[in-house]
Length: 219
Ligand SMILES: Nc1ncnc2c1ncn2[C@@H]1O[C@H](COP(=O)(O)OP(=O)(O)OP(=O)(O)O)[C@@H](O)[C@H]1O
Ligand SMILES: [Mg+2]
Image (tube, rainbow, N blue to C red):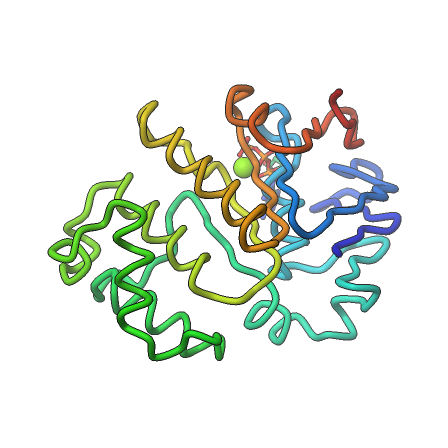
């Protein structure tokens, strides 16, 4: 579904790329973990496949169409759902309105369906009471689950997450990984997660480590 072809990126110095010549394929219905040292370029890689920045070299294709051809704004609106560590929620809204707004902006099939949004939140342990509160009054773990609920409500087939369990306790981490597996296996989406935790990575269907400017698939 998503393919990188000869992908390369550097910030200032062309002679010091973070990664180069990366040919990877990510399929729908599968989950992928990306491990690697701090500063190796994991977040940078995610920002490229999320259409937040453009490659310096090579290309990224969604179903054989280059992101450049699709247009990054169009790609971000319809094709990708992002869960960052800082949650990216609308902070002045309730969880329920966060979901409804995201569905409206992206023209999701369930746009306007309040009962559906409530159900998804409740499946993720966000009670009816919490669903109507300002998200700023929710804990970090609860906000993280709202961000995942938003991903489940929207139709984007590609889901990318940057350290989604970074500040969660063990129970929440387990729950969040199960939800990502559900997104991949039940919703048939392609889930790509950056994580520092080998335990989290090992629960994904595939694991890569970014080292020496290359992505190495772990057995
Ligand atoms: N906007 C920027 N301008 C210049 N250099 C940057 C910029 N953003 C990141 N870098 C550098 O690029 C390298 C890769 O950063 P990146 O955030 O992709 O790493 P990471 O693998 O996600 O690290 P971490 O595990 O700590 O989150 C780092 O050395 C970082 O300092
Ligand atoms: Mg990072």
